[in-house]
Length: 358
View 1 (tube, helix red, strand yellow):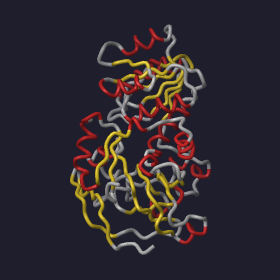
View 2 (cartoon, helix red, strand yellow; view 1 turned 30 degrees about the horizontal axis):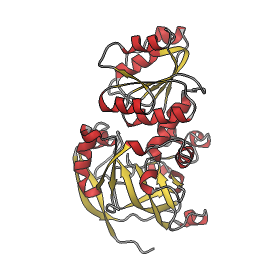
View 3 (cartoon, helix red, strand yellow; view 1 turned 135 degrees about the vertical axis):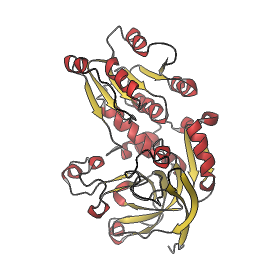
View 4 (tube, helix red, strand yellow; view 1 turned 135 degrees about the horizontal axis):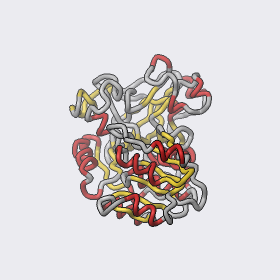
């Protein structure tokens, strides 16, 4: 396909300094494809990237195009991508991580912690973080970071595979067994998706800690709601578990206090699976962690769970539609971001459409 020379993209020029600008359409490298982007969701990390919370890291430099929860259609292939069977018209969704493919971690399938992280010249990418992302009409991506989606699945729906597969990874890493009680701290998008994943994998009771409309949404999904504004969370967890605590705890809030609570709420021998990133390090109850053999597991992104997430969506084991609340054209990004950040009108997952509304 003959592509245009230029495209619209959201360009971040500095801290909270962004605008829609005209930039060159990218050219594929040997194992890249170029995709026409259909949908890019605002991730909870995006406001932190835009707000300068990771200076010199995400992104490493300006000008920069963020965005990493996306879907689209392949319109051009690099030579190796074509040899490996990728073709024009393939409908795909993407994830942010692309390991170098050669280091010890990549060879183990743990490309999310690639030893060459941050070095594009060594083959590593992280789209929308320090490698140009998907708030643009066209997206260049390695074929290692995209997944074909079923014909029956809309592109807008498929764009949620990246965050859903992160929630799935977090649940799986808790080593939850069918019938186990699960405690989820935080009822933002990741926490709500973790509820859906835990249910799909056979959790027993799901206890959810949050507040407001999002806690009500957790209850609609079948969770037992615990409002942290209405008393001691730990007391409520202990009361619900006969004082034992919960074997699988998912920390999705990303605050120092909630991580400490997670460690105290875990049952003896329990696992605390952490996806939230706090602004400051928590004070951990190490005596309890050691004597009761509490495991704390950190989770970064979604290695090898995107295909599983697609299967759960395709087979209706998970229904993401109640979370997909808003959609805007990319040119309305400032409005979309404001609604997302301020949680206006029940906002949970907010979609942008770089090639217009359809």
